[in-house]
Amino acid sequence: MIDMNHFTPLSALIGGLLLGTAAVLFILFNGRIAGISGIVGGLLRPVVGDVIWRIVFVLGLLMAPLLYRLIAPLPTVQIDAGYPLLIIAGLLVGIGTRYGAGCTSGHGVCGLSRLSPRSGVATLAFMSVGFITVFVVRHLLGGN
Image 1 (cartoon, rainbow, N blue to C red):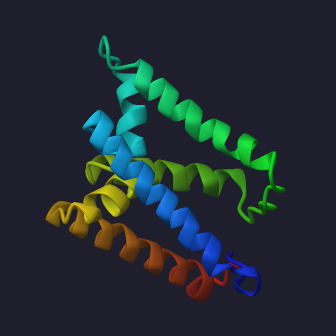
Image 2: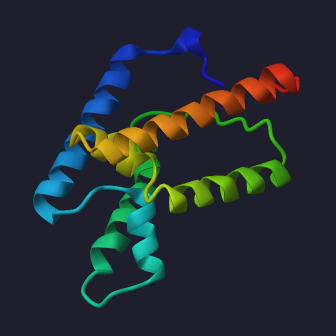
Image 3: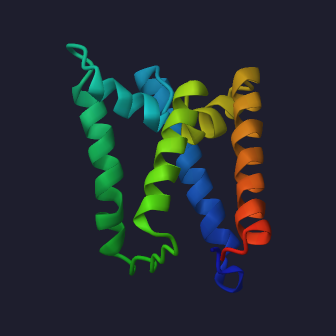
């Protein structure tokens, strides 16, 4: 749940600018889309000469919160779902990523910025399903 009382548009803007800049630099210097599912998926099917940059990218993702913790406290994370629901949700996201040929970072950030019609459709699909899921869980099933 987003705590709108403590939402800071400036930090969201700065985060978006950093993410966009990183995606642009990644495609300029590496010639690839910064789609996390594709990058991690490439580690599961390794190709000679294509593994090191993927490992470094994933390590960067894992190290970012640790570095952030040096300058500010990490936000408190509260997950109001049990393990079975989280496992099912993770599997559904993985299936959607596979069928959609990409994830939110690949389609929603990189694809939309390149004006990719396929990414536009994919982003509309996963955002719509997300909205519908929240509505069903919160309002029809009475969840949090």
